[in-house]
Length: 123
Image (cartoon, rainbow, N blue to C red; front, side, top):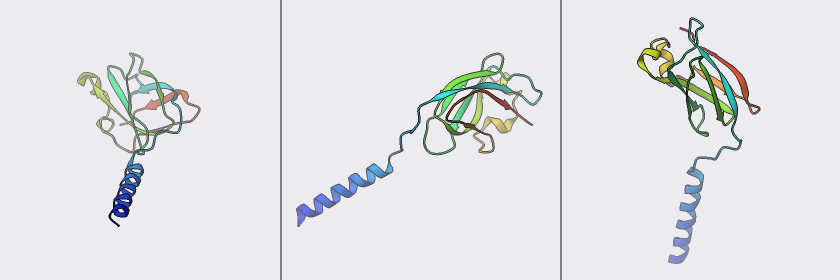
């Protein structure tokens, strides 16, 4: 009887551990590139953009924007919330709403990738 209880407890524990783990991404990373412009249409530079998965699966990916506002990363397809961080002088040109992980600011990375994403920041 005691052996049966130990076996059941062990199986239950292993089952719960297996169910609570984060699922691994089912897709390979794809090319995702584009340009970030501010509300005046000028390239955003001197800071980093970070993409956070809008769901529980996937990893966050950050990139330092080039002087022309361009980024070029590999990322798992899916929906991402994005925000900015870095040099305070550069961040001054970015509306404050984009400095936090606001779910209103999202991008969709398609399974085929996207090499021409335009992210235009509005006030």
